[in-house]
Amino acid sequence: MSVLVKKAAEHWEYVAPLLRKPKNEEDYDLLVLALDELLEMTKLDESHPLMSLVDIIGDWIAEWDHQHHPMREASGAEVLGYMMREHGLTRSDLPGVRPQSVVSEILSGRRQLNLRQIRWLAEHFKVPVDVFI
Image (cartoon, rainbow, N blue to C red):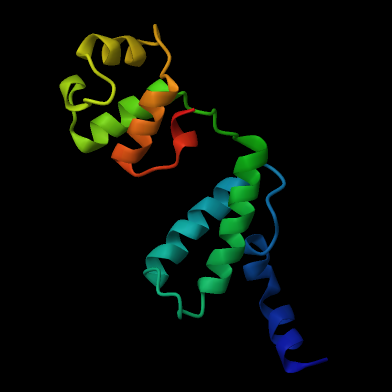
């Protein structure tokens, strides 16, 4: 038996919970807590020896989230509202979507963004067009 395998076997009972994909929410929660601790320890230093463990656990958490906690797609109006809040904009700050009443109708869901508005918003916020579709 190699020294590496022997050392791993000696410590397996302590590290095993961190080195298996989650099979239920309890496993998932354990990995999320472990990842938080690891991120605090590594300070996101890519050269830290524990970053490979961060990558593994992060991938398993992302896979679990994708399968068990899928995110709903945001509508163009929801994205617009979010972008406005993030940039501290008002309805009058969007000349490419004017007048203000049109922006209000879009944000309330009574009107859809049109292609011209989507192109302008994508250019204005420097994001891909499909963000607003």
